[in-house]
Each structure stands twice: as structure tokens, then as C-alpha cells.
Length: 493
Image 1 (tube, rainbow, N blue to C red):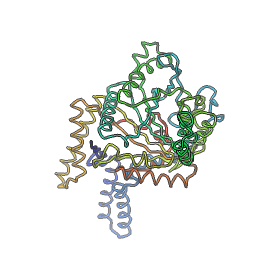
Image 2 (spheres, rainbow, N blue to C red; image 1 turned 180 degrees about the vertical axis):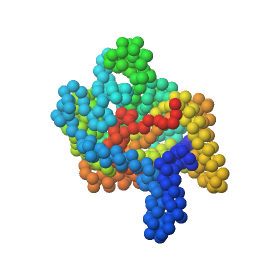
Image 3 (cartoon, helix red, strand yellow; image 1 turned 135 degrees about the horizontal axis):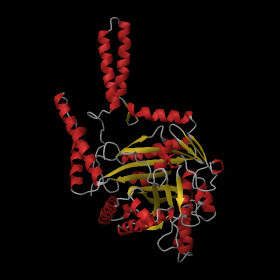
Image 4 (cartoon, rainbow, N blue to C red; image 1 turned 90 degrees about the horizontal axis):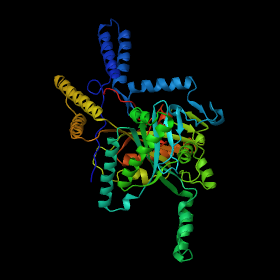
């Protein structure tokens, strides 16, 4: 089974040009007219320089983006620093000093915990209510498997089964978005040693002794891989059910928990083993160890594995004590992080394990997150119509101007036509973005490890860009299993 992703769409008003770039081209044209009308060379030179500046703004790109796209980013970053909004203080310095609920920075400042219990009435389920967006998030811990060691038929069946899970997510109209996060963290407790100590039948044999020595020698560099599936419910789409159940926070929790059972069963039917929906203390432990990497050692030292399976962390302490957003980095408690956006997935054919260089051949603390948003039929059809109209308009414009159509334009047009046919056939259309966050103890180590990760992404056929000026939002999307990170859609219903 081979895969091929569509090229990133060159979105714009005309021939891939946005309004800002078209405005810069018009300004350059007016400057050209001024050059011709100028009556002396000094004035002409000035107009030529201004015209070259506008042409650069219209045509040049930096770090994967057009220069006009950087204007709002730079403006927001400067405004944030000017108002000191790039510095966050939590814990005892927060507004409520975590007396009532947790404190999270940035766009997650409106998040609170919802008390909820599983249908059996015994286990607690950790639900985070985003009051600003009117969303509710729950996180399912999954047990990953090393598919490289499996035969090809089993690998293919896993891909097909996971495709059925994605279709079921698309059929659930209450889901605003979902995400899969795979993170690696140091295994300070060394699970392999613990397993050998508690499960080995004959620990006195020569083979057992050799295995113990091998595992003990690898302990300092051992990494633990964890997989989390986060689902984000839109309360506006559940309003009728919530109102029928009473309209209170308890009613919201009951409706969401009822939906979680069907989602987990679909994941289990796909052959993915799970450990259940994280409890409030379990989910708080995941968030806490992402904000404060050094705290993972403390949790393991007291017998907590940092996954939320045991005692976990007080839900009010899930947030960071302090964060500071820089142009290229994000500092949070004991760590420094940098997030890249994988803006282009492989456009050439790749196999099932195309992401193996990133997932299995990196030895740093990092998170790989795929955030997806299923589109309703109306939105998918509107988006397909907009793409088809835009590509047809661009094609006719190029014909009138006698411009050559490039291979990229033809690929985008074919991809848009194929997606339109798939939507008409009843397939669910999904918007998605992939983020990779690397965390280290200092900037020097962070830069070194990020270079390795980006090189592995390139080997996988991906193109990535550092989200300069947006590292605080990028960390929330790439390092936290909260299905956060997709910008609002524009131009469709």
C-alpha cells in the first residue's frame, strides 16, 4: 500500500496571489509609471528603489511564507511584547492562585475542569471545558505497537482499520476536532527493569542475568513512547442534548461521557489497545510534565509514572508556574521548546511507515501531533466548489495572459478535482495540520536536537517551517494533547 499526499494549495484571490501581494504588485506598477514620468535621475532612482521594494514584498518568501503573511505575525508579536503579554505567571502568582481551578496560559486561559464519571460510576474521566470556545476535551491513552516488526498484511489491515476510525470521527457531527500525539520522554523509572523484576519466571538463569545487565546498561538513554488521542466536542452542536439533560455542567459531562464510549469502542475495533480515558489527575500529569519536564523525575520518584495511571497530579496544578514567549523559542518552567509546522506532507509516493525516521530514529524529548478537523458535508462541498472555481479562473487568466501552466498548478488542479469527486461520493473531508515540538534543557541543546528532527522530517519527504513569532500558540498545539491548533475557516459556509 502506497500513499501520496496532495500538494499544499496555493491559496489566493488570483493565480495564488493574496490581496496583500496583489496590492504590492499594483503599488510596484504605479511606481513604474512614476519612474517614467520623473523628470530627473535622482527622483527616478528613488522610485526604482521603492518599486523594487514592493516587488520584493509581493514575490519573495521567507521561511515558507510570503512576506505579506508575516505582517500580522510581526505586528501581533510586537504588540504582545509591548504589553508584556509574552510573559505568564501561574501558580501562586496567578489570578486565583489555583484555589478554584487550574491556570493555563494564552488561548487556554478559559479552561476549567468538568467533574465526570464513567458509565460504571467508579472511574473519573478528565474533561476540560474551554469556556471561550465552548468546547470540551477528553484524552484517551493508547498503547502503541512497533508496526515495523509486523508482516505487511497486518500493517495493511491496521491502516484500513484506522481509516474506518477516521471515517467514524467524521460521521460524529459533535466533534469539532481530534488529534493524535506521540511523545517521547526519558524513562527514568526504566519500565524494562521493572518488568523483569516483577514478571521474570526464572531470574537466576544465565540468560536472565545477561538480560538484566543489558537493560541496566541502557537505562540512562531509555526513552518511553506514549500515544494520546484527544477529542474536542463542540457544545453548540450538542446544545439540544445538553438542554434536554438539564443544561448544567453535570449535563454537559453526562452527554460527553456518553459519546466517549462509542468513540473508544471504535478505536478498540480497529485493533488499537487503550488504557481508557485519562482521569483528571492523569490528564493533569501529562500537561504538567509537558510544561515542566523536570517534574517527571519527581513523579516517578514517588511511584507515579507520569502517564496518569496512578495518583497523578492535582488537577489545579496542571498548568505552568511561568512561561515566556520568544521569537523562535518558548520557555516554560524547566524547559525550552521549539515547534515546527509540517506544512507539506510527502507529495511523492511513500509506504506505510514513511514517518519512521522521526518516530523511531530520534533520541530527544519531542512530540509529534496531528490535529484534524472533520468537515460537514455542506462545508466540504463549499470548499470544493471554491477550489474548483479558483483553479478554473486561474487557468483562464493564464491563457489570456499567454502564461505557461506549471506542473505544480496542474497537480493542484488534479488534487482539487479528485477531492471534489470524493466528497460527491460521500467521503468525509478532513482539514489537518502536523506539528513537531522539541524540548530541551537549554537553547544550545534545543537547536542541536531540532536540526536532527528536521533532517529526519526531510528524509520522510516532509517540508517543515519554524513558527517564528507564534511559538506560544505552537506549543499549545504541538506539545499538549488538546486537539488545539487549526485556524478558523474562511470563505466557506
